[in-house]
Amino acid sequence: MAVLLAGAVLVSGCTAGEDAPGGGGDGVRADATEQELVWEECESGLPGSECAVFEVPLDYEDPAGERIEIAVKRLPATGDDVIGSLLINPGGPGGSGYDFVDHAPYKLSEAVRESFDVVGFDPRGVGRSTPLTCLDAEEIDEFLGADYGGDQGADDLADLGPEGLAEIEAANRAFVEACEENAPELMRNIGTADVARDMDVLRGLLGDEELSYFGASYGTHIGARYAEQFPERVRALVLDGAVDPGQDQLSVGVEQATGFETALRSFVQDCLTRPDCPLGGPEDSVDDGIAALEELLVAAGEDPLSNTTGDGREVNRARAELGVLAALYTENRWPMVREALTDATEDGDGTGLLLLGDELYGRGDTAKYENSTAALTAVNCSDSAAPRDVEAYAEAAADAAEESPVFGPMLAWGALACAFWPQEAVAPPGELDAAGADPIMVVGTTRDSATPYAWSEALASQLDSGFLVTRDGDGHTGYRMGDQCVDTMVDEYLLELAVPEDGMACADHLAEAAG
Image 1: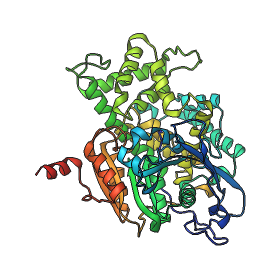
Image 2: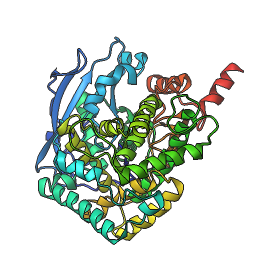
Image 3: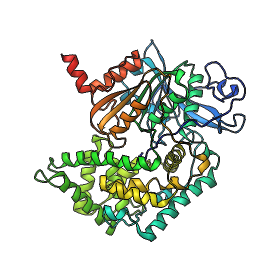
Image 4: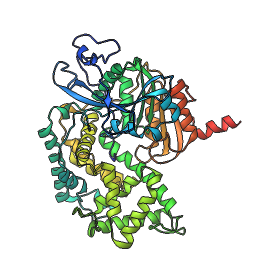
């Protein structure tokens, strides 16, 4: 997802009743941990996958109160010597761990799949679990596609003027009010501290004494939060493409902009070497290429690009910009965005850029689109503090425009909904150290677009037992991204609990092996 979260500390809870052996603990009643998972054949997914539903307290401070449902999918291990379950999460917030299981054949190595039952769940508020919805699809289209001063350059986007500022404030207030109207209790109990407690209930129901976990992007925060709350139950956690729990929500948007700026420069540098690059040629500099992109975006703000899907949406600056950003998550999409930018520059056709942005938010499935966008905002705003003064966002947008002229203002303003989130639903700030946990692996990619490498460095240093594995490369996350060294380190850690030297880059590791 385009906007990620900052950190939070444990939401305190009370204990009622005794915990079942190996159960959730920490305020979870025995009747929650003594459930049984009734596995049935899944309606969709990989052959052999099994699905179930379990219940957790809506509010862990009221463990005898209302329950919500959590949907879970399991792909049994392919080998005979099974270590246990490997819980997985793809990120978001709002990403479906349930659906992520279907990608196991290429997201996880064969050796890992032989030794673990791969288990994914939709976090509370997401997808097939009890969902949070705020706006309908048409309203989300309007919310994400609003162009407040989109015919201006990046510097001017930081200063929307009185009219633009009033419009963007009203839109974000309306978003939060819609959440309040549709699900007032769920929106107050959707933060990652609660998700981690749900995951511990699941761990107990699966029969695992300790947790093995792979989390990417936002999923790293779920894992880090779990280790903070249940350090004695950690077996092995791989946190790939980490977020930094020590930041407030607005800082996340500003710093994330630097990651996308780095990724954009890598894309443009590569593009200029190719004959089909719409941003220039080998004689042009990266700055020249970015200037050409900025010219296209400003033009789209003045006169929207065409849209051949027939859905009536204008491909204005906001939607064109989102399409470029979406393609920077992985090098595999660079050819797609080159083609989309060619269509835009040569034919005035913004359809390709529009569809790239749609893919980022899952617009192809209306229910998923409505829910994932709501969950993204709700979790972000619940997990970390944010300024309540709208002027702070204008200042941050101006700062972000200097570091990331293309994406900075958009990502800074993207946190504005959190200014209006119910104060009592926001977790207090703080770093995580997970004192007492066994070694925890953090994987960082040097030119990661969505989660800057500095965040992985920060998380690894905050965790008492954290150690960092570095992939030198482009794209979001590091495992199964083409670096055999990283893949080997992750596999050996998950399978054998092998811990390499902290901070070792894979280039160094290979050099040592060769020597």
